[in-house]
Structures are given as C-alpha cells and as structure tokens.
Length: 510
Image (cartoon, rainbow, N blue to C red):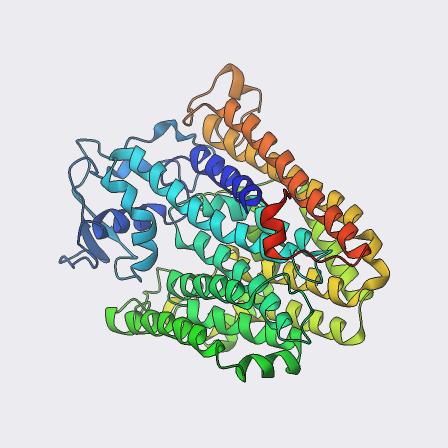
C-alpha cells in the first residue's frame, strides 16, 4: 500500500500547505476545539452574551479576529491575515463545534502540543492528511485485488479529486468522514463478495477485510454526529448491490459478530456522545439561515432545487463558499464521471442498471430528506461537501457493477481508466493553480501576477507547490492507470495473486 499512500498523502499535504490558515470552512472552530481538547478541555463552557461554547487558548494560540479577513470575499488575498498567536488576539474562542464528538480532534490535535501559532495548524492538517491517506490507500489496495477488479482503480481514483484532497488536507472532520466512507464502500463490497462461493485461493482474507472495514466504520460514525446514519446508508446500499446470498452468509458466520460488535460499540459511543453532550444542533434563529421553522416539504423542495449548486460545490467550490471555479474547469471531471456512470447504466445487466438508478436517486434524495427533517430547527445549512461520501459511493458502485456485470466492455477498462484518471488529474492541477492564485493575488487578478507581484506566499512558495502538485497528479495517473493495466492482464490469464504473493513480489500497490 506504499504507492497509493504516497500519492494520496502528497496530494493532501500540498493542499494543506497551499491553503491559508483558517481558509477552509469552519477550520477555525475545529482547530481551536482540537487545541483545547488535547489539553484537557474536551467540552468548553458558556459565557453570558456569547452564542457558542467557549474554549480557552493557551499562550501562543491567541486568536485575532483579523485572521479570516479574506474569508467570504474572493477579491481579498490572504496577505491581510495575521498569525495565530498574535499578542493582540483573544485568549478564548467561541467555537460552534465545542460539544462535538472528540475522536477526530484527538486524532489530529496532538501536533498542537509540539508547535504553536500557524505552525500548529499546518501540523494538524498534515496529521489529518495521514489519517485520510491511510484510509484511501487501504481502499485502493482492497479495490485492486480480488477476483473482480478491472474498473475499481478508476472508481476509487475519484477520491483524489481536488475537493476531497482539499478537505482531507484541512482541520475539518469532513475530510476524515469522506475517506472513511470510501474505505467502507470498497471494503464492504469486497467483504460481501468473499461470502460468495469462495475461490480456491482467496486474494483477500476476511480478517484483513473485516479489520479495515471496522476501523473505517468506527472513524465514519465518530467523525460527525450524523455519521451513524451515513454508515447505515452505505451498509444498506452495499447489501442491495451484493444480493441476498452473501448477506445471508455473512450474518450466519459466527466470526462476523466479533467485528460487528466492535463496529456497534463505536456507533454506540457516537450516539451516546451526541445525545449526552448536547452536540445536536440547537434551535437556530431566523437570522442564522434560510427557512428556520420551515416545514419538511419546504426544506425538501429547496434542496432538490439547489441540487445543481450542491453538485458544483462538491466538485470544487473552495474557501468559505467564496471561491467557485470557472465553469469550463469542471468539464474534465464531469466527463470522467459521466463516462463511468453511462457505461454502468448501459453495459451491465438489467438488475445492475436498476441498482445504479437507485444509488443515483439516493445521492439526490438523501440530502433533501435529511435537510427537510431538520429544517425547522437549523434552517437550510446543507452544503455540497456534506454529500461527497455519497458521490464517491456512486463512482465506487458504478465501477463495481461494471467489473462484475459488464464483461463485454472489460477490454476497455485500462483505456478508459488511463483517460479518466488523466481528466481527474488535469482538473486537479487547474483547480489547485486557480485556488492558489485567489489567495496569492486575489480572485480576479491575472494569473501572471503570481510571479510578478505576489501579495501572499504559502510555505515553500506558490510556484513550488504548483509544480509539486503537477508531479503528484502525474503520479496519480500512473498509479491508477498501471493498476488497471496489470489487473486486466492478470484477469486475462485467470491469475488472482494472494496477499502473501503480492508481499513477496513488487507491484504498483506496494
């Protein structure tokens, strides 16, 4: 798994360095909670006249209000910001995530014990990248092995798209959530497949699959309060995709219940924390969001109408919703996504087409149902990034169905994978450069001014990071394309290597 981990980690670290501190949505709230929590303040306290929970910040972490002066206005470069720890900053912060589940914040907050100021935020971001890259590398490894794998590298390759890497490279549980969700999607499909009529030499042991699924599921359910629901959705869809036979065998195998118990314990902790710590959203005021006190139907219809906007946000809408990319930049990614979905809907069995339609409908309807249910309390707070776990599930399921039920087009898998991964990488490079320019010289400034008149520079410099991202993008194409090519050759001769054999011989998966 060394090669996929290296590629995902490099992409995430480059985004972590390129994004100004607290330029990612809600990162100031998540980072200050992590800083306070690893020092013993798991839940903050309330102050009269202060709307949200307050956490204390140690010396070197004073929070100046000017830190996010560039947020919400794409015309303002990041040069107006000041450093975390500025002597004029506040010694406390009213974080709206103060009562959230503590698991993620322990996983990424520990570097703040070693550094202070802006350096601590970059260090926490890198810790977040290591978590996300580990989950995605395991997903890629599991996807590329087994009896059926031709289209799977491309399906998982969509997780390397810039919006996913941007969130993984930030102090925000949304990144861990989507990486864990991909691991559950892939791992559970592989696990259920192992409960069919087993081959003589299974490539993936059930214990290895169970361990990965269990870890990813526990991270998923504890990333955010709604995580248990997301896990249930993924499990139900994977069971529908796999059919009744493997589901029945899984639940009639005694060894499964040890792993199911571990996942249930993680889910019970998440639900218990949410109910006991008061981390469910309180009643919002009408000035906080649209449609506060609205009806279910109002919330549902609003989200359905806004679905094109949410899709755009999920593909690439950076910053505090202040940095959309030009429409033309989305087309490489949209083309790769559309080709995979169209093939899954036209070149597989009738049942597979129906399953694909169900998954696509769920990706549209579930956000509307969730927001409709809570709109009276929260108003419309949905953003496209919240559904990334669903959209990545769509690509994973599409690749799985093509692999399992689209043998007529199996010969196309390597070619489509090379082209599709190249389109994803091209979009990533464009997005990275444009977002960098937005913070270095302002949204509407000419790109050339990044060289002639930069107003802000990230660690290592903007041009160095852009060059690094180009190299990482080429590595992504090579990783995904070579994997698909080797899988096609392997399956053409009917050879499915075991994990032991893979460990003893070099492969693109490490």
